[in-house]
Length: 247
Image (tube, rainbow, N blue to C red):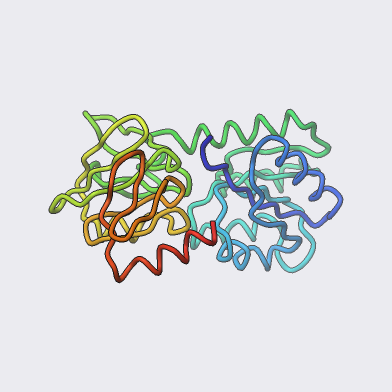
């Protein structure tokens, strides 16, 4: 199973927010936070960056949902799905400027919520949209919280982060060893290490980054992942053992 999509709920009616959270958990999504005011949305994102934001248009407080969305878009490229009980043209025309991934009208059914999020996820995974939103060159990997896209034979190939076992340096290249295949990409291990989500990956040697969730054995000078012995630097062993205690 892959790493679940994280969703931030921005809704000032706590009963509605709690119900949305419950429904999303049942659908297999993870809630990164629940916020009731537009003024607090950036702090929540900094604490735990979501993949998608569910945002009520008519928030109480200094910022309505549309103004809060504008703040988000100044700093982040996070898909937004608007929740609304007001369908008048003024709100709709203002909201269109944000280019939301979907609108959900209140009251909504569980299926409405599910379909809107699935459409947003599919759009996120679109190769052209990912390249456009991340501003990457054709050869650079696109790294999201739960997957990466790499250029392979003129196509962008998706690799689930959960499927990556370890990464090995090869001069200015990196070899990704995954559950089903090996990939070679043009990026240094140092640059790759800076981009990867550190909650899953750790550099344990000058030439190796490992996925902590796939370590089968830790020995004196190496770790074992899928029957492969990977060298472990003495100076990094304590850090590794500490990290393993937190997962």
